[in-house]
Image (tube, rainbow, N blue to C red):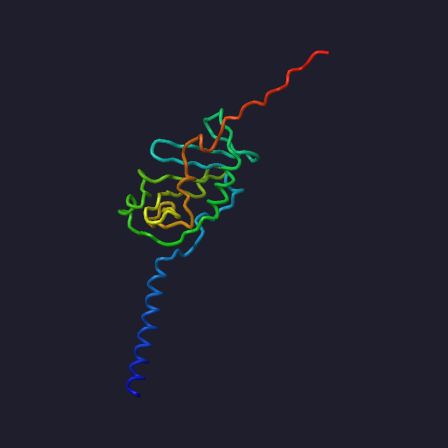
Length: 184
């Protein structure tokens, strides 16, 4: 019985050591800082989105957002509000790759990814990312932050919100019909 207890104790020690080694190895794939954007919405005065040959630039004048070079469109309040509440709360969930050769595979290279850039009131870049669809997981996107080589999964799928079409962001507002004045 004593020999069996020793073997069981050795096996238990090996299993516990294996567990801690595995946990340590898995920890390398977790992001060190979860939030992607460490900026306040009040600091953002402009945003640019581009993909392929299409792009849109939205500007904030302190009161309202406007789509530059599209005078006929008014920014949809619910679209811009939903965008900021989702994007600014976005987190990295896991590291996907550190190799720039894999950017195309994860759709975060310059040709297949959608670029998002936040600028301040002096048009200085606050943050810049490239977003791609995740083929592995429908509920998240792939993201590359700035010039870094790392690609991460995000906590939510934001690919559809990084839309460079002006008509996604704006709508044509019809002038209210003014009742004609009646003569008395």
